[in-house]
Image 1 (cartoon, rainbow, N blue to C red):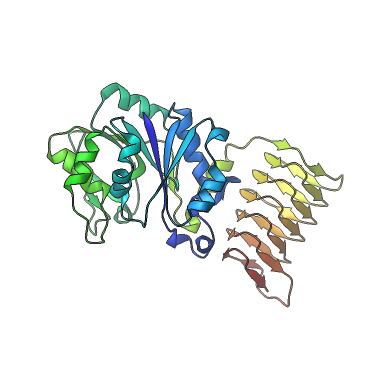
Image 2 (cartoon, rainbow, N blue to C red):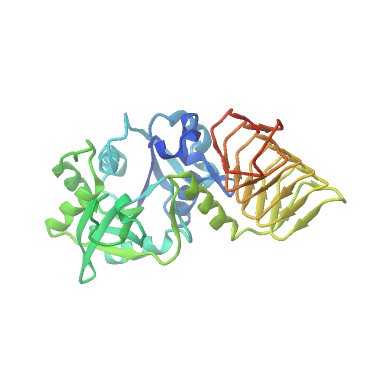
Length: 352
């Protein structure tokens, strides 16, 4: 079995962060979201993996490399522009050949990995196996209607959803899917929809098995989703302090501090992950916060937030529920609000 990871989207719902970087490389728990997908495939025994890339191809190639760091072999396939999930399958046909494969959307997270789904698929050998999850707003997803435990109908982002079962961004296919992709036409939004291709399999007598996941799954397409995913990932954090903590600081609970980092006259209350070469002085870092490499945090209270690398934060007020890009500066000025909510893009500067 081979793997196919889709990493070519524009990330429009995460702007301004994605004006200057790939959405799949935004860190959750200080690890790029894309890396979780690669590791999930590797841990299920799938090590021959292709990644579909678009405008951010150079950044993703640089971050992933040839895959050897993950114990995998990575091939990159360029998609001229986002033309749909089924189009990604189509352009990967030469790589996939006649092998079965698992397709993983590169901005999705599935707690617990995909090993059990791979084993189920290999055991029963359906034409396709789709992962489903109950969601409160199914109109924003591909939605599946079941009948007697089998997939009956799939609809992409329906105005009136036939169920609350959304397609999770993980699909397992036999090579029959290529016939389905060749048979469908672009949708009204000009894309080859994977829901239409799977519907073709259903309509032409192929077995499509559903599997409703019981653990959590996150599509990290919006800032709030990234923060939720960060919280969920940090729940499993183990304490590991490699940096320097002075005698005037307090580190409580499950906290990771990377090599070369310094904590001075500060309180850290986990779960928290702090990258390498970070400086934290006279600060309070509260639960569910991730701070990436080379950030500097002075005289600040921050919690339930994600701070990307090389940002400088010095604030007299509490920062909560915020997603802060690379090289952002939040610096003192004449000021008003005590609590602020931020989504700042790379190289931003904020005075308050």
